[in-house]
Image 1 (cartoon, helix red, strand yellow):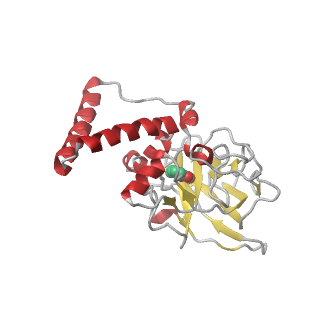
Image 2 (tube, protein in one colour):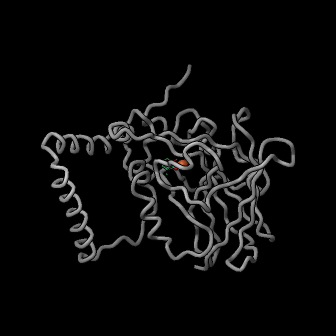
Image 3 (cartoon, protein in one colour):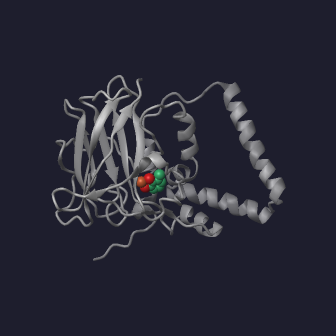
Length: 279
Ligand code: MBD
Ligand code: FE
């Protein structure tokens, strides 16, 4: 039986995952809430006046907002169209490794594997093998031992485990700890570009505007160590489709990998280092 991925089935519904996320430190000061809410509403009012938005359009907006929640797509929609600015503001003063958005598909608690071993994957996992390796250092270049490198990414069809049907739970998700030399290595399979599901409300919005629904192929990473600022980032593949035209606007020049043929003769390999800012 072949499975047809629906919007919910292909990874759009990240609402339950978000509900479990630990959240601390949100503003509760009424003056700040009021200032942000006032400016947000004023911006929206200006758009309505500028474009002379009609009642029919206002009702279409209401119906669509209701549907995004029903589809479980608020994490997807917000991470695609809003998170990049939040990330920019949050990490403006970082000097080390460059961050970008987390997106909706991170799951904490991935299996810890030996550095240099293979990510959890199916025996017949499709795609081009990739040896992804590097060193975690501090800002002076001193290796950081015992750093945590958490890697997750889509498969060769652009699907994420736990968000698409029929994929083993921790497929292409793993954590490696750096050795005394600060080094880490993963054997994995290169991901494909990711398509926002076209049959859900986020896809309907993108289609209505005449945009394309694609993100370039990417590796997601969280790198952390005691006494350092953790970094959440993504890495892209030089020359890949949509690298210059990411629907989520999350590509930065420092985040582009230049893989070459692997020394082993199988697939590709690439080295990328992370310098962590002090906490
Ligand atoms: C993704 O895979 C992703 O990384 C982001 C940011 C948004 C939607 C899907
Ligand atoms: Fe992603």
